[in-house]
Length: 256
Figure (cartoon, rainbow, N blue to C red):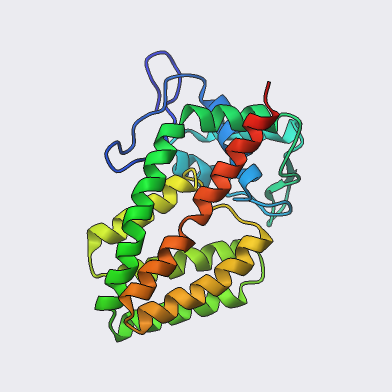
């Protein structure tokens, strides 16, 4: 979509009380570059991993493919990405940090920090409740779905497989609440904290810790232990918050 001045309106990360509010009618390509550089710095996409397609990114961010294409070209020129042609082609991450990362990340996080704080708070309040409710209401179909998703995460061989299985597991747990609003809330929080790019921050250490926490959380929900499910969820869902806060501290410490 476009504004009367010819600038597109890139949707911001959403908060429960301010859904789908446009950021500001400024150069959207700049905002996409900043957002993708931040995502790469957080490990939402790691070196060697293919980004979503132009079409997928355009849909995720509610902008035109031409804007996405321009942003990807600029990130390629800056050394973040490498395009590959062919059936399995696309844009692949080359490096998580470049000389321009500090400024790009600072601009993205600083302008939206109040939104991030609201998102952290809302998620920390509600996700433990979702886990506890799932444990109380879980039926045999839910238990089977959670077990399948847990196995998929455990055997995932790469970042993309881990991302898909992680989303599958948390959706299965939210679905066990049998409450559409709670399911929707959980998915919206996930989308918002992934910068609407479909993946939460990731490192090998996060993956190792998540494997253990997923097993514990799934066992608590399947076993009907609401208190333990809530406690595990409370710690598990703070990982993304911690990584985003650490990145902000990094760019502020290195700044002028």
